[in-house]
Length: 360
Image 1 (cartoon, rainbow, N blue to C red):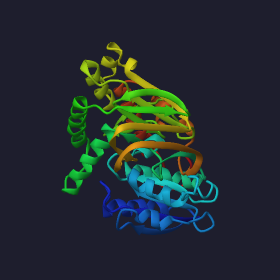
Image 2: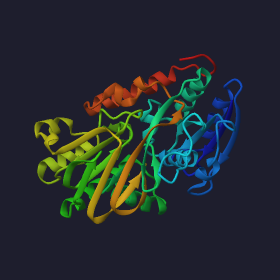
Image 3: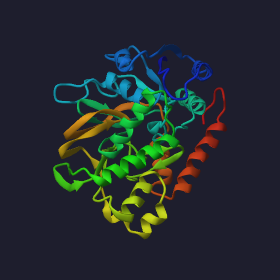
Image 4: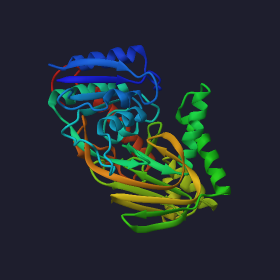
């Protein structure tokens, strides 16, 4: 088995010690031949794997955040003139994720530990047993995505966080909370007016927020999952989530819900009346009278007034547990403490794995 390890040295938790641990775990897989490279600039991971086929490499291991995985997916899939992948899932290497970023949403959604050392142990065992699965990907603005794409407040938060990181401030949940609340308050003063269509049907107009997810959960706040579309699966179509209003007490409860909390208040005040959802969608179109900030997989892209988001089903194979062990399958749309408990349970189970050899 031939494996390429691509590591992002600028990801949040990567260290020399972590790299040595990951390499040792992977080299403990019988018959695995490992080559390791570090990225040196944005887009480097895409360049490293562009044109790479299954005949040349069996698996690409991404050690970084969701952005690193995004780059690898874009390099492997490419795109034809009509926006479809150039190669099918069986023609390109599978992908394994060692999460070392700040959010690591895809790893959590796949049912992998979001601790990189634990994830490396799980990935090594999955490589031994030959377990993988195909997932769908989304496409927007000429780029593939594996987690989500959004217009409005989420892109505002990500744009501000990127400015902070450029100034030397590390990304962590304590930074995201005030940044998110600040963006939310600014949006309440001058809310966006987004019109959303899914598979040709109108979902809503004058929406202050619209997110299209490929995964469940939508994101994480530390170890706390933010679940907006509990019925969205990585193997299915896209999930749409929107809010019709963010004003008044219900608007603040909606903000808490998007931070993974406020479940009891959300039900008491019937905030669900302001929520719009659609699952297993192939095409979502978002339009706005004014250009809005736009993000893909946690990376700010630019400003857009119109965006078409499409789905390529079963486009990439990932080294991951079976679909029934997705994070959302365990907890769905439940209270925050149940979701947090599920995440802790995953960590405990990962610790019980054998360090060398054997199946789970």
